[in-house]
Image (cartoon, rainbow, N blue to C red; front, side, top):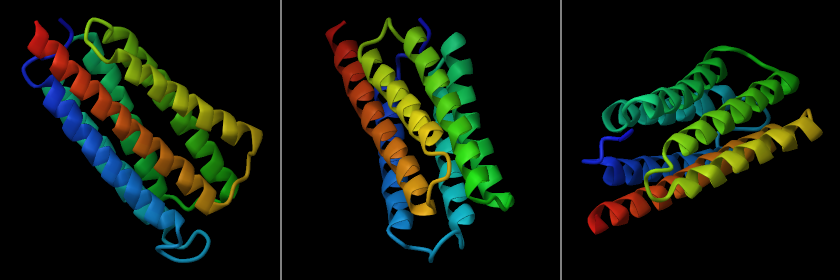
Length: 181
């Protein structure tokens, strides 16, 4: 088995709830929370991404085993590194677009790998749809290179929200499958 079946369902549901909360906080930023334009944008978004990454990292180490653990940890480290860039570097609109294009591509790849390694558990299709969603946002950024800060934050918010929903679905499905065995 590639997962610690003891706490997979409940841990993934918890991760999903955290990501949904972080996605909603991100939407508060997109709605004009911290101020116009790029003011405080990087600080708040960076803290949200670092929090999400740390949550995923801790749960990845606790729940996953073997190859699934490495792809889940890489996925969480992607969130942490992008959050640190957002927190500590001043980027213009093009820099933010490139940073989040890389974020969505890497996150989609790592979610797809985790999906492939999690096929023995119920609900792996949720991770597949989450990776497709990441690739969709990468494509949107590629087609419309320079985006407004509010639109970029909305992309990240939708991604976190959808990742949270997919984690909830995966966790519930994993819990149901575990009870049936």
